[in-house]
Each structure stands twice: as C-alpha cells, then as structure tokens.
Image (cartoon, rainbow, N blue to C red):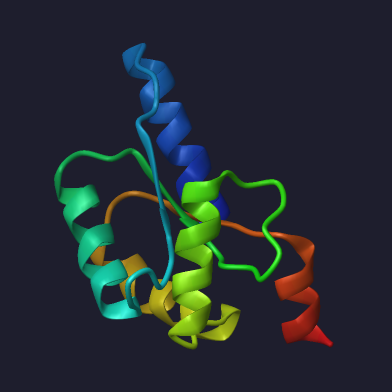
Length: 113
C-alpha cells in the first residue's frame, strides 16, 4: 500500500472510531539514522497513529530553536534526503503507522536537480 493510501486508511479508521490522531514528530538523523529507526519503531509500538519525520535543512527559518538544533546535528552527521528515504523504505514494512516526511522545498530540489 502506498504511503498516501496508508494515511487515508488511518484517518478513515480514526474517523470511524470517533478518535483524533496522535501524530508524533522527530528530526530524522538526530542523533543518527539508526537511533531514528529505533525511535520510529518505538513510537509505532507505543501507539502513534502517524509518525512525522523532519528532513533536516541548513536554513530551517520556519522551525523553532529545538528543531533547528536537531537539524544542525543531523546535517553535521551527514544525513541527507536520500539517507532518509532509504531509512523510510526499510521502516515502512515494519511499522503500522504511516510515515510522513516534513521538509522544505530545497532539500528535494537538491536531490532532484
């Protein structure tokens, strides 16, 4: 099932039960990708409905200081969009919660261009 379909199914399930979604967030790659993977699995097992992974960006002006620092740590460790997409591809079959990437346009352009 595609990520978009998983998200639609999850929202429909919640709506049928009259529940709201618990959406968790973490910056991918902070402190490293292995820990990010472990945390995603732990959030899923703990009941997160949707897990949002922030893609680190060098100029995160729309984010607050905590996420800015997390992005800087991840970037300093060499994390990039391709690493994160590879991580998500490996995690997706192992977790029930849909995984959603939160990013700026720039990291995508850098990878695509």
